[in-house]
Image (cartoon, rainbow, N blue to C red):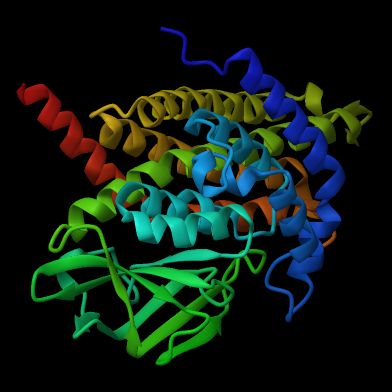
Length: 372
């Protein structure tokens, strides 16, 4: 079976790269990093919306392009290469996927066209502080369709217009949609993070109006579905960043001289680059398998998503660190771009729960498969 992109998807990928190289040079990412009052790059966001990327998998009847998830994976990989400082992942990989999977027609008619048009920015509010993500320990509650509690950290929570909140009610855990822009009883507090090019916030709900997403009491299964679908897309973004780290390290190694020779000729540097390549190719294999499972609606998506997520986290983190090491002393400076990928790799690694959560899911899925 061929898991590679089709010719049309490869064309889409090439055109996306050309567009992003022109629209999102590293200076664009740095402009957000250097500014305290610029949580994302709005001009880039508008350009991405005009390209139709926010509506890639949204059906045409709701204002989208009606393409497949594999097409979105190709776009995600290119966004990862340039460290795009926009709320694309929170809005498209998570919020839109949740609405597509569990939204009623009235919710889809209201929200999906707004997502496709770039008018709605979404976020997922699950965590309630430090430690592992544990649904059983959540304290956020819904009473009489009013939300009470606090969520932290919420990626893009300070700029989002809508949030999907995991909370408990009399039926158990559920997912609830909150209009952050208009609902009363919502208080948002921006928080510092390692990667300021992807902002984060603490959101406090004090009786905010909300509406249920999907069936009552099915929140755990719904959240797992959203996480698994998003994990594959995140894996492609991580793969794009890891590939760019390898390219950057190789380019520098071929230019930098030490003791009369380019450092790329030294065995220690060759080993670094080879190790990055091997981890990236392993992550690519898992990501492609995940894309197939996501696009085909396969029942083994939880296994494929967990494998893609673990490999994606490991490859991007390793590539970002080895890229910095290859650059030597200047790699640690603000002027060199190595730290931008290191920051983003750490942010993406925690965006859907840490690697320990996904390792545990991977083991559970493998054990379940072996029992059959």
